[in-house]
Image 1 (cartoon, one colour):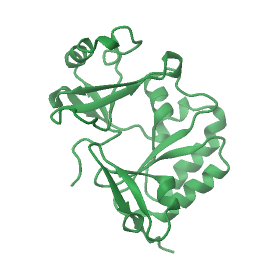
Image 2 (tube, one colour):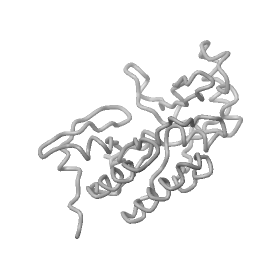
Image 3 (cartoon, helix red, strand yellow):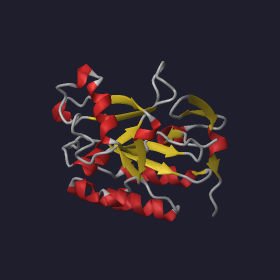
Length: 219
């Protein structure tokens, strides 16, 4: 069954609910950016639930920039306090990238187009493009999500690996499955015959047979 809210979904928060959630957390009182996060027009991201969290609330998070401690802030909000925000596509985040990344981004966007897919950034590139705060550095990975509507094309992962081989950065990220689960592209690409891979959902982890997730690519 597909999930109503999925890991990595961007969410806007009702300002009053955000203020109440932050005030309830004494440890956030002096943390930079957090109190004004929503009023500054910034979204949060859906994260995995922690053990013991109220299942009736929505687990959300935001990361601080490296200069502010790189801390990951996690909160749980009432469902009526959030609304979805459209995802950011890699093609929309180019302006936030270092110039040395340009050729790699164009190759990844073209790879997605060949498979009818639109890769999405997460991690440092996503947050820098959304906030204007400095998340990226020379040593940053490029973290991408590849949402697929059905089985995963094996040549997609072959293409990512080929682009990474000549890229100035490490390419990390997940294939997002139709049911909301996410599997690391590198693990799926490297799974041998009969191998299994770890699939992450917002509320659970599952082992799946790699062969059951992959599509045979047409010639």
